Image 1 (cartoon, helix red, strand yellow):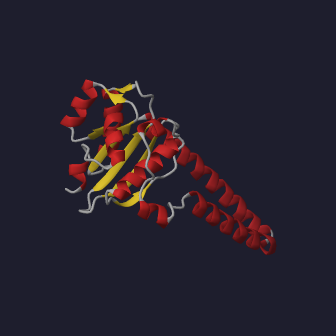
Image 2: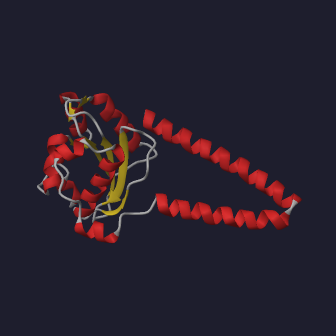
Image 3: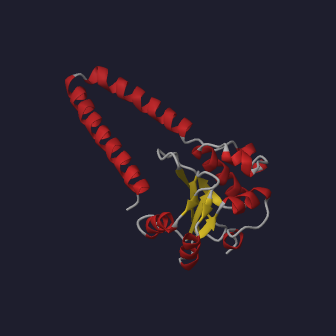
Length: 203
């Protein structure tokens, strides 16, 4: 299991424990003083719902229709991990990938984008914000493959880096059907020209 998966699992476990503890505390309050507890509980639910809508809100329809604003690979190098994730999401929408979702991540150097091709194939893109000269090796590729072949099985796994891949990483990705996009491919994708990903999106 990769470090990214462990971090997400631990995060959700902590959240689940907190929710259970708060729920039991609230139920005990309701038994003691239902007149005060019930309105307070309703107010909390409304606040939580509003917070979720704000933090998980999709990009405005106008922005999605217009597609990503023109950027260069130099612009990408200055982006945060979240900004890179949203850029990749906009590129997928531009290329007719549906149901694109870019969940927030607590991992600083990688994030993911989900979607599906026009033919219904599921797409999972992991975005790595790396230094231009950094080379991702076969170990990073294998970790991603392990994730996408387990509980998060997907039809089209894609690994994007703002750095580069080693030869062993490229060989492993090719042998396992993984689409690898390094900074050169990403720069090409930004211009709208075909990349290694393009043939898979129409399949």
